[in-house]
Image 1 (cartoon, helix red, strand yellow):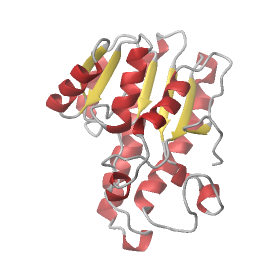
Image 2 (cartoon, rainbow, N blue to C red; image 1 turned 180 degrees about the vertical axis):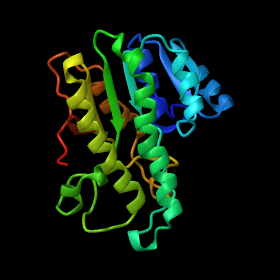
Image 3 (cartoon, rainbow, N blue to C red; image 1 turned 90 degrees about the vertical axis):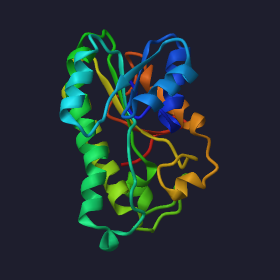
Length: 232
């Protein structure tokens, strides 16, 4: 199951998983857009209406899924590119509601279905800009030294922390839980992303790799779209 799969990187992830022969639940808040994505993806795609900020909706969606092999927490927002001093508290709240609280809510709701899989995998789509090391040092994805997009970047740093904690507590049950830094992609996440030339499909291949990890694969890691480790 891929959240926010009716567009952008999420739709490409769903398409790649379906191409591998998996039945893919296309998580979409909007039924119409979700159905169009399902039709575009084709065989193996199934619509799952899911607003990741609605606790009752999450529970209803989870009740429809008996077994799940892969959960990709992809849905995310970036309503402000402002530095912290210029970011409204409401912008922090909105961002954390979707990017952090929803990851925990969706993951917890779908854990029973994931536990029925012999090889459960969780992929959390994060951001290279959430890396505190990269934010203060030269790196391959962005120019460091800016405190812009404070709400988004700090929310993704929180997602990274959740990734580690879930990996540690679920390891004995065979789970592999990892975070992905997809790079700047041409999506409607925010105006900067929309103007970027990065191919969302390229990032999706990184998610696919983490979704199909073998049993001796890593867990509790943070990886770039090309498979290289990202420092926290």
